[in-house]
Image (cartoon, rainbow, N blue to C red; front, top):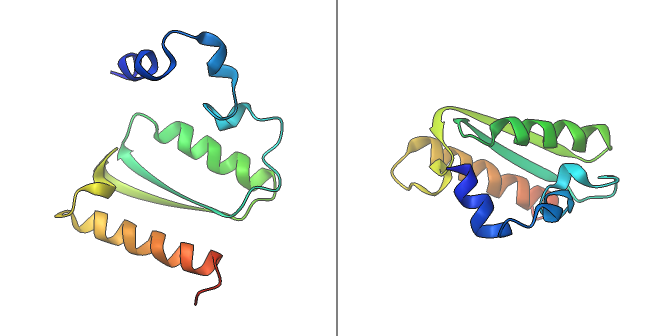
Length: 103
């Protein structure tokens, strides 16, 4: 399935895999980026990349927070009837408000 998305978005242009806008982990530095709140789901094929990105942000001195949700899939955040989605969205809103100093 990931191959389908890669082909759809990158159209087999392998050079784009090296571009930091496509893969932020390829950036020369992550220092100076704004605060980040990364939400991971246990059944997401991208969860390992998300964890590596979080660790790289922290190593670069970025104010990064990680939330991990067990028994959830990639798109859980947008599924309104899931209690975990409500929790994740509430957490995200709080982080955004804090980042914007709208306490």
